[in-house]
Amino acid sequence: MTMRLPIKQNSSYAIPPDYSAPLAQLFGITETNIDQQTPLSEYPAKFLALHKNDEALAWRIALIEQAKYSIDAQYYSWHTDVSGQWLISKLIEAADRGVRVRLLLDDIHTLGTDRRIATLNRHNNIEVRIFNPFKRRWSSRFFQTFELLWNLNRLNHRMHNKLLIADNVSSIIGGRNIGDEFFGLNKSFVFRDLDLLVSGVAVKKLSDSFDLFWNSSQSKTARRLIAFRPRRINYRYMLKRLNNNLVLSQQSIRRIDAVKNDLLNNPELKNNLIAAKAQIFYDIPNTSSIEKNHMAHDLYQKNIQTKNQLTIISAYFIPSKALIASLQTLLNNGVHIRVLTNSLASIDVTPVFTGYERYRHQLLIMGVELFEFRAEPKYHSTYSASTINIDYLSLHAKSIIYDDDSVYVGSLNLDPRSECLNTEIGLFVHNADLTSAVQKAFIEDLDRGKFWQVKYNERGKLIWQSKDEIITLQPARNLWQRIAKIIYSLLPIQQHL
Image (cartoon, rainbow, N blue to C red; front, side, top):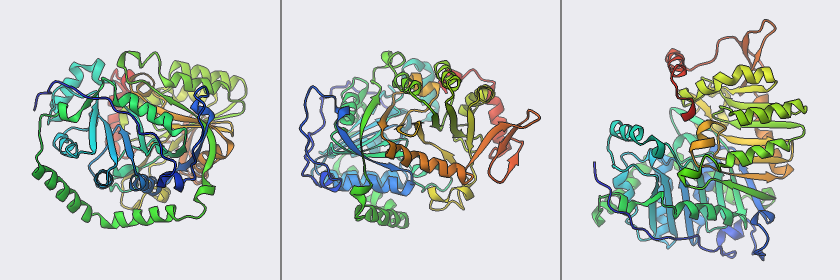
């Protein structure tokens, strides 16, 4: 355990975009005369929906490799597995060629990585900051949990944003953190997720959100936060260990590299991009203001405008009173509502399922159609390189589809934690083509039996029905998960889920 030093840090801001740079040329982005009186949401951006895990990783690698001036990365979680180390190595390569790299990480998942963070931060072109850090740099999860419980009001507020920005002209935003499970490489379980690749003038608004967090008093510089002072030999050892680890993962790296090259050399790339205007929602980092001014409340206002059909895709779904009221209003007006979320078998955080389960009967009685993700790997070959060997798959996407012409994609789950505790970010796009690109993939998932539909049979019993099977026992991965679910359901933890 080490003590935190007094914090002194300078502000920095996004580098203005250069529309002659490689990324701007790649996506066909040209300079736009910006009228300062016109909101950036009035300027079109170019979008590409990223459903496949390997393509989501390949595009991140591509943006980092193509960056000429700056890379800004903001993530809730960045693992030190194959994808995490590979992306770090790419950030170092970019910094070596003169690109300014700013990396902002939430502190909840940095336990045990202080020395690596400090060593990475030693690079002249890389700066790492930690959001809402623990005061003590614990090396044990036990002591970290003790500090969390002791100072719950502050430390329960986490930065859940997921954002990568290259040269202030291209960005990836959505549900994916950095880790093998988000890119189909994990050997235990894999997520089905969704991101948007965004290019154009509207990316500046995403950079504004990054700058707000980067310069916030909640974000602390790694140099002042971490007492360890790496020497040149530490940096060289880190590079050697990083390279050695990546050598062991060459098969996965070559496969993703091949996917990346196919994407970049696709002659139809520019034609596949969808031009549309985007409204950007994001929370401010200030803890005291988060609950009253949360983006979730602005997003719920979009529900009211729905005329025919609302589709909610949320990995963790625990509806608030406000959300239930808006759904009931829509149902009364004849709007068809369906919710796609995790089953007990597929969810990666079992306590969260108990919060959803409390509302399942009410939602069904209201007339909401409920679909729960199937965990069995045999149904999901699209999302993993080795689904035969993994234990299960889990839904991690966060999206809302309004009628057939508008879509939201971001980091926000529809649960109390996302609505009141964490900071979030997302894009609302009014465009039928992008809406179709998002909706079609999930409708195909439904049609191919990747979800159970939860309903009551004629005898009033709850059943889980797919295209070829009906079961009456709630699907779960094993008996221990069923027991854990019962225990968690007895605990007063609803507001923290």
